[in-house]
Length: 233
Image (tube, rainbow, N blue to C red):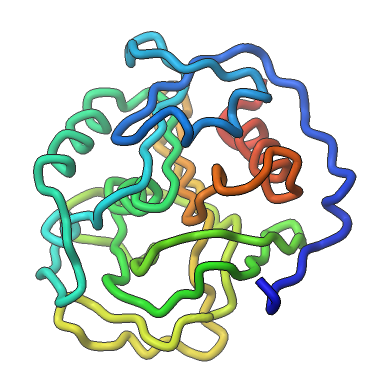
């Protein structure tokens, strides 16, 4: 973490009050949601009564889902992919959140691709659309790639946060580099719009927010982001 710096303007950030809501966790344990509890969420085992479906970390997402062959470094769980795609498709009107693999899954399910292998550093800074600098913690070797895939409709999105091309390589399924420009923004936080009658959205986050202490500025920023993007009431 010696090479990172945080924006001091976030130190005194106030987290907005939030009404009580329920989150349903997919694929991981309750620890993933530890940072949601202080803003009014409780965990439910009934997906039908939840306000938010939370897709968690784990294996890579199968490249077949986004129309590419399996790269040398990609390892996926087909059963998990099938289960989570079914959940995504069965609940189109619910807001969705994903971290790490979960964010990658939401990127694919919303019509885009993944970089299958990169040399992304674990601790690094990301920049945000509103001019902030956040410390990010992640364990990923794949990345969001905002190029439409051929299997799902590409939904509109907003790029909320990005890293400044930190990886030395960005490989596709043929183990070939994309050779992005030096100023390429590696997507780290993306908001996808579902365009349904409930105006539901998917928030894909590459970092593991749960790795931080609950009073960390990055957590406060992400808590407010949940309220401001997925829930505006």
